Structure formats: structure tokens, C-alpha cells
Length: 212
Ligand SMILES: Cc1cc2nc3c(=O)[nH]c(=O)nc-3n(C[C@H](O)[C@H](O)[C@H](O)COP(=O)(O)O)c2cc1C
Image 1 (cartoon, rainbow, N blue to C red):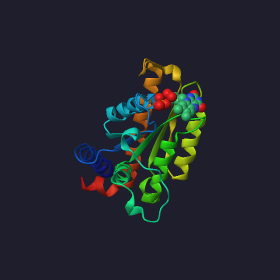
Image 2 (cartoon, helix red, strand yellow):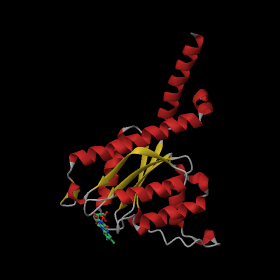
Image 3 (spheres, rainbow, N blue to C red):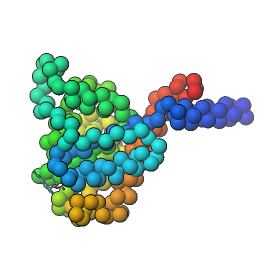
Image 4 (cartoon, helix red, strand yellow):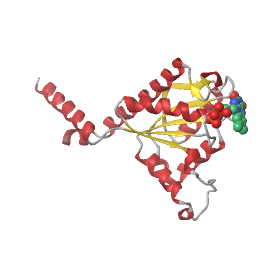
């Protein structure tokens, strides 16, 4: 009985602590550089899902970020500030949502280039963090892009959530996402990443919960 009460107090403490100071951080990366990108629209839908579940959220459109090409140089300090801003955003995140356009049946160069920059942060920058995967095609098939993102996420030792969304070109009309079912799946993906990231964080920070 006493144990039960203690557990309850810790749970309440945990809730208060996270609500006030320690929300889960979710970063959404959109991997098209095109103005009016459909991938960005899909990324926004997932972003809203994560935000609705109570997470802190950040959306980085790689088209706005202007990362240079990763070249594995020795003098890493010579990379421009946007590289370090990108790494800092990834470092802050407990979970990432990776949204890539389908380019020739696989991921965009911009998305792969951004993921290659994670090499500079060492494995800890994403290892053990949660990943949600989205592809956006002009046609109907984006599953190979999802699979490619899955390979990269696993190589980075991330944990990929069960829901993935391969968005077909037909889901868009006049530049907007008009397929309600796809929009709901994207929001669900955002919620799922947020939920698993929160669970992993609770697992990793029992001391923080007790202090609260
Ligand atoms: C270089 C290039 C290759 C592409 N390859 C494919 C493809 O293999 N399959 C497909 O369905 N769409 C393909 N597309 C179309 C994009 O997936 C489409 O534009 C989609 O809307 C996602 O890109 P966006 O976020 O820039 O809108 C390609 C587009 C470009 C520019």
C-alpha cells in the first residue's frame, strides 16, 4: 500500500515536472528545397500532431536552412553557423520526424546531406532517439524512400516508430494537402513520435522525476 502511494506521488511529480520544465522536444525536418514544397505541407501536418500531444516542437525546412554540402573535412570549425544551428536543434530534440520528397525512387540529396552532417555531432546526437518517417511522391509510390530513411535512421541507431506515411501526389490539390485520411495519419505519426520520445525520456531520467 505504501509503495503504491509513493508511486502515485512520483507520477504526479513527474507530470508536474514535465509540464513546467521538461516537455519532450520534437524536431521535424523537411527535405525539399522547392518553393511550395508538398513535403513541407506533410511535415507541417505531422508537426501539428506532435504539438497537439503537448510536445515542444520545431520545424526545420532544409530549403530555408542553406546547409553546404557535407565534405568530411578535417577542419570542421570552418563549417558555417547554419551547420552548428542544425546540429544544436537535433541535439535538443528527443525525437525527429524526417520528411523527404521522393527523388528518383529514394530520398532527396538535401535530406541525405543533412543527415550526413550528424556525423559531426557523434553518435550521441541521435543515438537512442525516436524517429518518424514520411515520404512525399509526385506519383504513387514512396515506400522505397521510407525504407531508405529507415536504413539511415537505423545506421544512426535511432528507434523508428511503427507508423510511417508514404504520401502520394494525389493527396494534394492546388498545393494543399486535401486528403483528410492522409492528414490524420500524419498527425497520428506526430503524436506517436511524441509519445515514444516521452516514454524513453521518462525511462532515461528517473532521478529527474523523483526530484520533481
Ligand atoms: C529530381 C526529382 C526526382 C523525382 N523523382 C520522383 C520519383 O521517382 N517518383 C515520384 O513519384 N516523384 C518523383 N519526383 C516528384 C517529387 O516527389 C514531387 O515533386 C513531390 O511533390 C515532392 O517534392 P516537393 O516536396 O518538392 O513538392 C521527383 C522530383 C524531382 C525534382
